[in-house]
Image (cartoon, rainbow, N blue to C red):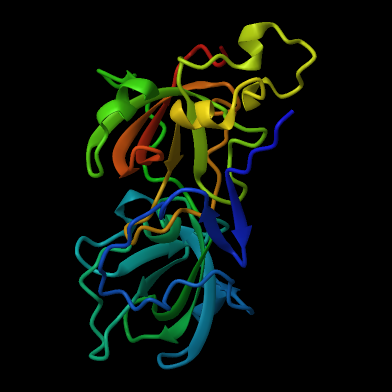
Length: 283
């Protein structure tokens, strides 16, 4: 069986075998605001309420639903799942005003995401924290990411690859596979293969324990029939979570809605905004 490396993790950074997987966008949010390691000493929001304005505090909580974000401002409301306590987290400029960039989606900062925040308690009703560091410890997919209705006019990978261009909206259909591990560990990245290439399951090779790896095909053919799907945040960073689920798994047939990020004749990368799992979960 041939071994093919889709991607590797080096020092916490995703290094793909293809060109840059996500394109960064300009932002007013200071680049060091979002951190990968959770600040130590975090307290529940209720405990933090005993602090005074001006004190340095570290809190943890969960994004409090759809209405947790304020349009056009770098603020988010966190809740303590164990109580009814909430806190407002802000990212402010040197004048103490929230930056004019909505925090929704940053590093998976979506409803249900678990967050640790280090900063200074500000004056305000309830617990208000001006953040120095925000760590999304458990990212969440955007609301409605798992689609409940099948997208119209979806095309197989081979049809999309023929004339794909960066920035093009697409609805692409394929099967999860292309390697022994089509899901990249710790990242919202997966490889799909089109119907034009038979998997080992199609060939009746019962001895194959991983029929989704297409080990009977060459790496060149797999590349010609595949697409890399990723979920990126507003700054272009790939979310540090997984796309795998009970419905989106090896050999599952899925339809991905999104935008072409890279199309250079060799690699095809799609930034996904939604995924639909076709009822037939395997080829």
